[in-house]
Length: 498
Image (cartoon, rainbow, N blue to C red; front, side, top):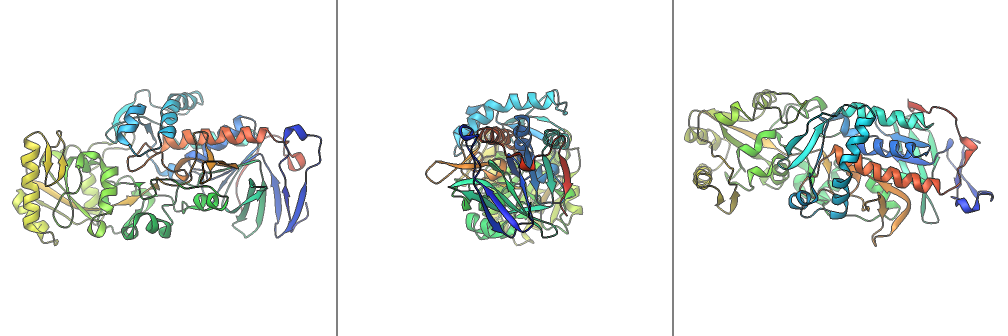
């Protein structure tokens, strides 16, 4: 291959196998590689897509922009969960895409069986009530990611980290590959019959977040891998893909405020998973959400409050139980309040609620508003639930009652976005009119509408939607004549691009 030339090969249907491919030349490419499927992003959805395509006979290039594989999935606790039924999905996520949600629930057991058959650790017993409604199993997420890559390499494909996909190649309205920039500035063109976008969402793109969420998006703490900056969404739009609902909704957890620092090793221990058992007020001393909705929904609700801050108020009973409990198997039991205090959070404790209110009022919170809020909450909770000042109080709510009493200021974070590329339940990217964009597929947090304010899970939906996209991409690749000009036999390669 001549350095400095770019080759764009028109896909040739199998029925024209004896015809010579049509090739066009262009400038400024250092290398051309030919594969069947390119997968952009190596988180759980990209890894699953690449694995699935490889196991269906496709030669796959799994491309990751970061120096290490795994994306945000590699930072997770490994809980593989989702809705236990379609009805539960509809109830928790009434604005979700039911077509996607129905297939997600239907494919869950098959995905678990695949992981178990692969020898990856999956807990024998499920955990129920995850995020108040879900069912899931603790897994070895690093084992899952490594197994997926091994399937790609074993089928003669490649897994390359440290490369950035800068544009999609298109011909006759079809996506025909990608253009990549390596760490040392080389430009590599991958020609492929199908491209899967799995970049993990657009949470790192502050401009897109502000357009979708509003000015308080600037206050969201990034609780994610730094590479998910909307590459998939921008690439899909360039090929004519449409958008979805849920652009202003996202997944994350409440974090202490302020924080002296926040690094990847703090993502899990700093999360205030117990917030659903507290009274949550804003800086005016007023409630604004039903706390029993769960931390991932409260996290979103705090975003739209003044200065995107809230205060968790609770008693010694919660302090000695849920604050210390392990929220997910394998996550570990730690003192989350103690961790928050050590991290720099504004906090208080007092032997009585009136004394705690006195301290909180020194933070600028209206004393009278806060006193009324706590009194009304206790009254309605004691009566079995209802509404306090226009905000629901669940029948299961428990007011703070046994001292000492505690308060900690919190702020919202973002791990990945819920809106994104429009797709169907085959993983095909769709245009604004609902037609498939030929050759383009998407999965995981790059797709939109599966979760929408309500959260359907992270690892399981990522893995399962990756399987959809990988299957469809492999089917498309199989319908075209393979180009063996640059074929490499045997096991493929895993590397960091230089």
